[in-house]
Image (tube, rainbow, N blue to C red; front, side, top):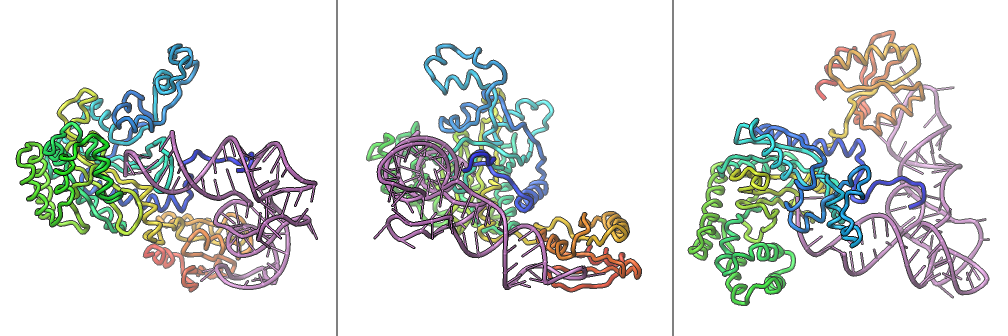
Length: 456
RNA sequence: GUGCUUGUAGCUCAGCAGGUUAGAGCAUCAGAUUGUGGUUCUGAGGGUCGUGGGUUCGAGUCCCAUCAGGCACCCCA
């Protein structure tokens, strides 16, 4: 980097018109599907009180929250001891009251509690906004990125799980992304932990077995022992890890293993019901029961959902699950919710890599009017007005420069048509409409031009 | 927080064992073509080789430090 050159923080990005156009295509698709299913939009502030966020994402999560330094003489309020000890973590909680939101789910929980008396439950809401994480950026990982959440809160029905999976299926079908939906249930995982005698170690067990396809069975077993499991427990876990067959076969076998676990059986029941709803309205994509799927923040209590793009090396592009008591921490217990979140930026990367964006999303103006000078421009001004009245996106080249330059402008900006209005055209009223893709040029009166542009 | 890796033009890179005024392609701008773009041809602008120090007669090249990117782990969208 040379000295004076400006830059932006690591892990953040500028979005140029092309990128915005493509990103909007993703947002619009998701939004349309959400709306089709009765979800309603909300937005929450970029910053929350730090106390709202802290402790909701685990120890690691707390570390990754971007804190906002208080304004004014913030050091005077800090505890002198903390300051002297140079205890950054503790100090930051004394001099930072606000933080950038880390996801959309916790702010949503806060929103629900705060607005509980205005809300008619169950509430179906969606939210498309950026979130920030002080993570180390790498492929498919940014410090500022967009999440597209949909949640149903205040309903225990597993129909919601089905509907969200169906939404995932529809969105990716529309976008042309080939995916696999992986589902699991936290209760089944709890049952497994109980079955092997380490109910209290469920987090350790799940984070270890989550890595199965990444590091292999042996390494997972090693890690399980490191995390405090006995050899016998690891041994007992093996048949569960290696389950195969259809979704229903897997569940049948699990039912035998987990026969003594009430939670486990409940999880199996839940899973069966979701699969049942799905059987009545099959998805286009594959929906797979994956017992090694343990992801999901620690507040998930039921279903866990994760979406992987097929044939692309990319982390999950959509995730979700059910949380029975998310609002409990904010003083509203017993409110169950289930939600999903599309990672727009990762979806963007996948689609770009696979060339899935339609060409026409890059078209802003439908037609460019050539500028030949003052007189012609006056005529063109009226044409512009008429086109716009007919909702045709158009623009006039603002300067009287040579035609080549104006044509290049149209070409570079993906403007599919150029309208040439010179002396001849003004006299005859027949304007020259050029199709930039085919190079074909037609001499047409304005009403015909409007008709022509309207179809395309 | 841990490990690995890379810094040369706006972008992608070349620069051969340290040796004259640091190169290419793409992009940009201009001209060939003053009413027709995407192809072609010609030309131009643009670099204190990330920064600081060291070794040397001489450093883009070697050494050290530092800063900044990238990738992987952890965790996650």
